[in-house]
Image (cartoon, rainbow, N blue to C red; front, top):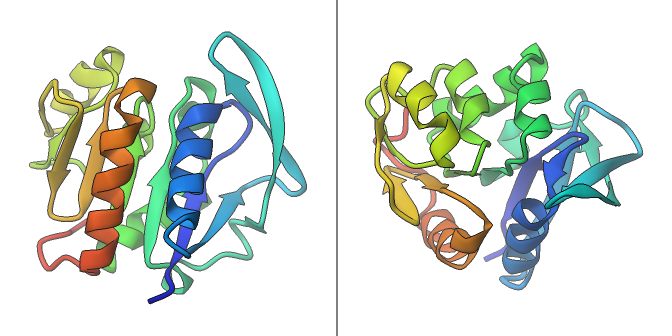
Length: 182
């Protein structure tokens, strides 16, 4: 069955954390849109330098969470920091939780979830640098390659991408999760 997946990103996303899940989800035969506050192209951060540009499929103004089956939030230091200050991005993210849809966030990506106020009481992981932020927001942080909590899939770093991608597919195939909440 065909699925539509949104990846929310802006300039400074960690390239591997967008590219790897996007390619893995497309191999399932699913449509994957890059959704951004920007139009045109957004520039990746590739480990220690600026990387290639990626085409934005829809702006936040054009995209509706109801058109998608799941959401992926890549990290990078700049990407989540910019998105967490954008009210449209926060509303977009929070709506996936309200609609009980699967959400995957990796590395620094969960910072957006903190500001969308959807982490309290959730089992999660992330890059270690933001573990205190997640704990302070009420999440139960664990240092594991992938943590799944009622449709919420989180991972630590690019080295965890194989486990992250596999769990994303599993949770998306399961569909809406009754326990997923905002």
